Structure formats: C-alpha cells, structure tokens
Amino acid sequence: QHDLAAEIAGYLEVSLGDPGSHGGTRSTEALEAYLRAIDVSDPEIAAVFIDEALAHDENFARALVTKAQLGYTRLLNGIGSEEGTWAEVSPLLDKALALTDELPEAHVLIAGFQVQRERYAAAEIALHRALEINPSHSEAFAQLSRLKEKTGQHQDAIVLAERNVLLDPLNSIRHQQLDNRQWSAGNIDAARVSYEYALELEPLNHNAWIDYAWRLGDLENPAAAIRLVARLQQNPQFRSHFYGPVPKIPPGGVQLFALWFGFIEDFERERR
Image (cartoon, rainbow, N blue to C red; front, side, top):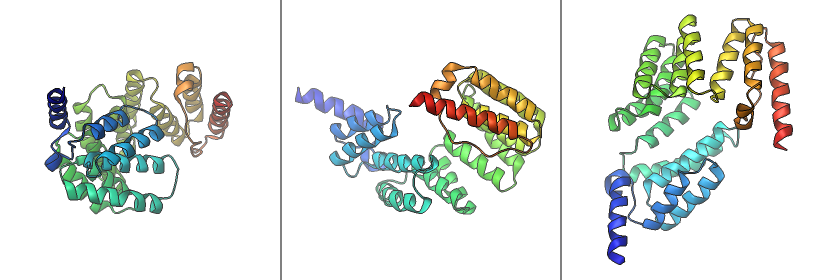
C-alpha cells in the first residue's frame, strides 16, 4: 500500500511539476487540495482549498500563485483596493518566484497589476518573460494585445489577438478580444462579424454581449444596442448565469441604460 502511494505521489509530482523547477510539491495532501481548488468555480471555496494546500506545503509555488490570482480576481470584481490587494499578493508572488522563475502565470499576474498602475513598460517585460517560458500562453498573448491597444499600437494588438485565436480557434473569449482590438482600430465591419461569431460559439458569453451593445452605443445607434440586449433578455439560460455591475451609459444610450438597469434589477430579485 505504501509503495502504491509513493508511486502515485511520484506520478502526480511529475504531472504537476518538479518542486525545484516547476513549482510543484512532493506532498500528496497539498496536491490533492490544490487540484480541488482549481476544479471549483466558487473563488471562496477555492481559497479554502488553497490555504489547505499551503498548510501542507508552504513552499508549493503553484499554490502561492493561485492564491495571488484569487486575490487579483477579487480586485477585478470590485472587492478591495488596488493598494491593499497588491500588499496582499506581492509577498506571495515574491516567494513563488524565489522558489522558481518558471511559472508564466506569476509573470502574467504581475503584468496585470503593472497595467492597473499604468506602468506599461514593466508590464510588457513581465509578459514577454511569460511567453519565453511558454510561447503558447494564451492569457499572456491576450494581455500583451490589450497592452498594445492601450498604448495606441493597434496593428500590433490585432496581430497578437489573431495569433491567440489561432491557438484556440473555438474559444469565444479569444474572438471577443480580437473583436475589441478590431473595433478600437476602426475596423468596424470586421469587428461586427467577429462579435456575431463569438456569440455563435458561446451564447452565454455575457462580456461579448455587453461589449457589442456598448460598441453599438458608441456608434450612437442605441436602437441596435437595445435590440441586442433584448435578445439577451429572452435567453433564460443566460439570465441564470449572468451577474455583473451596471456599465457606463454609452453616447445616445439612455434607453439602453434603462433597459439594462431593469435587467439587473430583475436578476437581483430572482437571486434573492
């Protein structure tokens, strides 16, 4: 029985990564808790499992990075301040990278914080490091594309987004990101086609719905935006999955805002 446990532990260590170079763990208990954490969708439950993993192995670098990612996710969801979140996650990332520099997720996360602070050069360095480690890291490509867009390098942003789509052609979110880059570059017709394709791939991609509606509002076409949100409202499956803040009012989109706000109120009522 002990030999079998050792054999399983060895397999899991190799599959997750050698602790010395890939941030893994030799503790089967830590690994089991970690795998449970990354398998759940509720971030609060995931955080409990990650803490359990780190209790078994405080030098489990992948678990440290995942705990930092959970903190960043809370920030993106409007929970906490940027300064407070960075103070919380920075020691986790420092410790993980001291254990191994070979975790692209850590570098991508650092880049995310640098973008929040408008430190674009530092963010780009971190993202290029992530891509050195893993040249097919989709999230690194996505963030680098967005960074190029923010700094006015629209053609480079589109090229990176297109490369990311090629890595995962059936991923609705990657198509949506390409749509956004196209729209920002002024390629409106290409963006419209891509938005529709993103929604065809994943009808529950609420970010694509909202992005598309706001883009139509930006064109001062609130009627088209309202029709789009009305399509969204008719999908009960979508309603059961969506939750998010009320976005800004686009130009000419007062009716859209009213319709959207009513949608959120209905959803909140159903949740209660």
